[in-house]
Amino acid sequence: MVHTGIGYDVHPLAENRKLVLGGVHIPFSKGLQGHSDADVLIHAVCDAILGALGEGDIGCFFPNSDPRWKNAESRIFLEEAGRLVRARNGRIVNIDSTLIAEQPKVVPYREAMKEHLARALGLEPRQVGIKATTNEHLGFIGRGEGIAAMAVAAVDLP
Ligand code: MG
Image 1 (cartoon, rainbow, N blue to C red):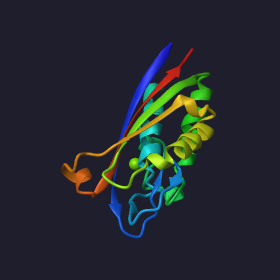
Image 2 (cartoon, rainbow, N blue to C red):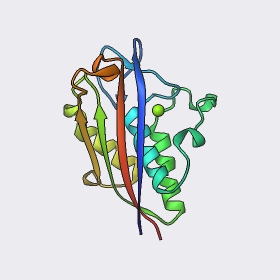
Image 3 (cartoon, helix red, strand yellow):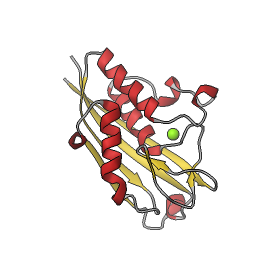
Image 4 (cartoon, rainbow, N blue to C red):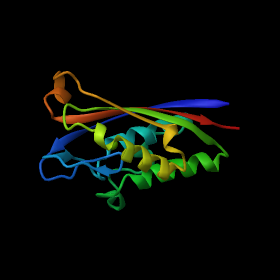
């Protein structure tokens, strides 16, 4: 039976941080602030997968109070989510996601992000959807104070 899960995440933009989205370094004047590399897209995808498994969110598995995850690459979290699926004899059918950012333009990096996510999860890039939109200059995203991401996952479980 196919189970679905949703994920949502936000991180603030800050000076002197590298911007990493979907595991890809994107040249920009600011980066996302967080305990790990603050890859908001991967965090949302992780939560979607965990949600499909009926598990808690990423913070339950990788608490931001744990120094092991300081500046950690979020790929580690994604790989662990994939392991949890396999441990249940499950199979990820597909992932879909939307990045919500006023800046920078992420479309040129979309294929690289898809490939990174697919590789970490043992999927084909065509099983990973990444879309991007702005917030039409509204609210904190529109003011460029942060970036949000939402994701869904479909996981086939026995
Ligand atoms: Mg996060």
